[in-house]
Length: 119
Image 1: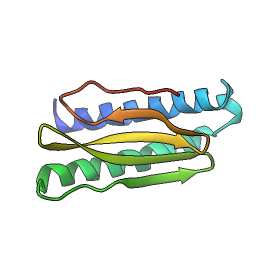
Image 2: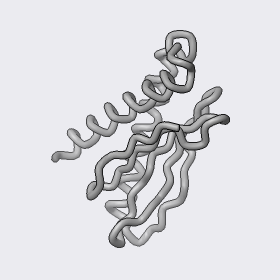
Image 3: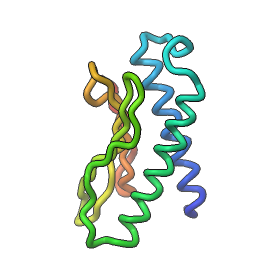
Image 4: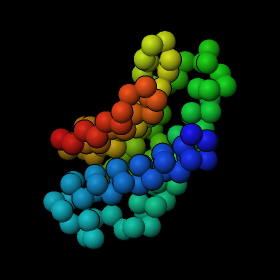
């Protein structure tokens, strides 16, 4: 898969996750919870940060990744949590809120399927 297709897939997956999380967290009342422009802004910033972090992993394999908080809105935090699989670093992208520590999780590990973890 080419880099642009990977970027599009990651961006789309992240947008779906944010929408699904808002849907679940707000008692199935997304329209009154987070305005669409906030979701899109958050998605764009998160996608850009994830893309940069993935480039760092690819081009600087000796660099140990650290947890990164991407963006905080009222009731939402997106963070990157580094993990290791078969001596290779990858990230878990986690969307959380104050009452729900890990609502949705998406892994960037190419060897395992994406994980959607609803609590």
